[in-house]
Length: 432
Image 1 (spheres, rainbow, N blue to C red):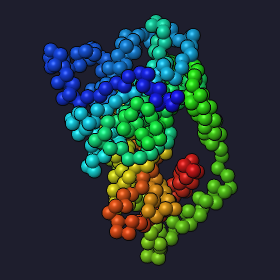
Image 2: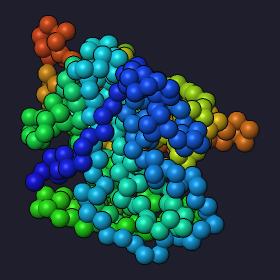
Image 3: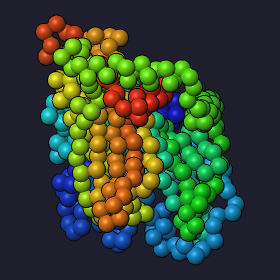
Image 4: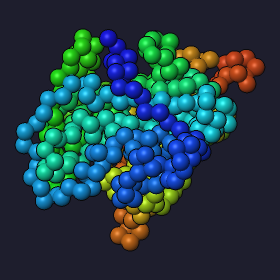
């Protein structure tokens, strides 16, 4: 049985726009539109919620009550449970066809879905799944602090429409000592049986568990795959995790140094003799964009930190803009190659997003690839310090419908510093 299809064992959480939820409330006698799930304000740590995020907060209500009411002085969990993927499997249904207001919230200027907003919802749903898997039957133990560590390969398999119902579904795919891999899927149309034609997007999130008192890594419940598909996914994820650990420990070799020097040699023509340089080349530094925000309390999560999905949405929107002004045509999203969450972002932090085109590929002139890197940097003027909190890598192509020939010339991007060159080489190797 397909793991995503198994999500039908748990009815999807319906999502309604604010107007639709208010209408439902009035039909039930009026009052607070969330009255059927009404919780104290303390259970809603951030009022910055999309309709999907609000639905997930409702779905988490029991876990939230315990998390808010539990004391950090309670004992840590000693007896770990063994859970099946089906116990954490959760799905959310977007009623785009019947809910005009909801559809409007997710519509971009080209009548497709706002990918950044969908990524925000994917992170929220993955967090709910992580909480379900780590839930402890003992109400006296202190709850775990669950943190998004990384996002790997958010791959778009087909364009997402905003006029067709859509479903998000996910479950825990693999568990280590203190980390979890959660596979997310977007299904459109939202059919009862998931097929290759209806599977529109696949994403893999990594969450790590911390002790809420000591802030040290904490063990999580075990995972026992049941179906053949769940067992195959567990084995494949474990193998991939092993390869990633080996790649992280790999030291730069002589071949890498040669590639770095070759890139810098090509870039020196652009810097020293720009009039003689290849007109289809450009320096990385000339593709950069930047914006900045002050992190507001409305954007915080259950643990008081800035919601990871919000950061991902802001990074995606800057990456999209960077690709747009670089390529000269509307970008078409292909995938999130990798996202690292290096340190938490707190309310009140001055956060700067910096983007650049890291490298391009033109193996297919009708479908060039543009790889954009975005760094989120926490800047603290009082202490005159700054730290990278998140690194995002996105891949786009360009909409060729506005090109007369159907082919586009995408400029080659070259580094002007050794640090940039090593980032290019490292990212290219990781992507391939």
